[in-house]
Length: 299
Image (cartoon, rainbow, N blue to C red; front, side, top):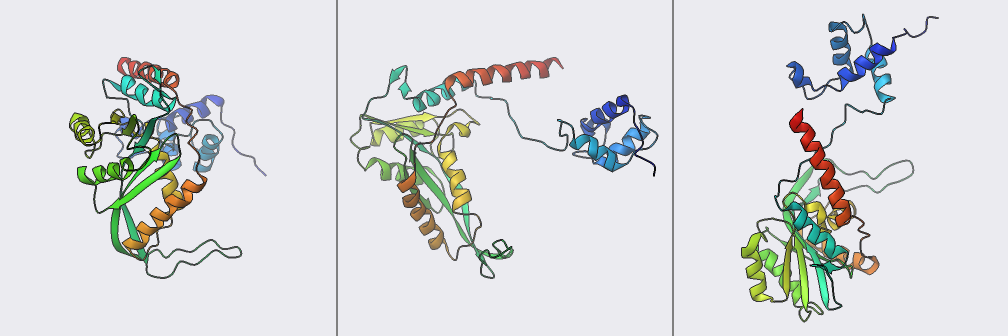
């Protein structure tokens, strides 16, 4: 029985390099190359006389490079990125402007999770059984959607949330009021509110509105495109996995009830998130990004 055809190492390397090329560089109307297209291109370039998709797939799957995968990325475009991000990271380490936070100073991380739909399945969801996963009907009726606004006490692991028909300045201020009217926040020396640059709480105008009503509030904005610095995003990922997936709710009222009961459940077992990314890590990351940007400019 004939074995697999032998290809010289140079051909293998050349075809792997071909697989890593962007199709638009060669005028192809594709987002990525399939194994069949790689084979045809390899033959057209004279790299090999003939080769099959299975051989190409075997080579690529055994290699450290995965040209069929991709990830999104973005360079920081906020000119004050390091300063703004550093302030947030310093807070997580218990400092503000170089001074340790006091016992009567608190830290709140807040944001909005928009358009959480209530989807009524056309047939009841079936529980898992022996050798069978949970079964969720594909078709559903839309029962509306909530904007969910939570606030997370970073150091005390407490969560406060509310459901609103839509986001906006007033809904966000109602969330702030829900928190600030409680002890110990209303009488605290200072309460830091960490938010992103969403229109509900963006800029100096938002800071003035909040501090006029609650003088002990200190708004802290993350840089543009840096919501990942906001710890409430971790809670959003927990909500997505544990509360709204799979999505099967008979009404908006049922969805709101689930979200609020989960707050109570989660708070009973929650611990502060183990945040390990520091200002030192940030500076190293920015140095790598700057080097990468310089390479792109010189390419």
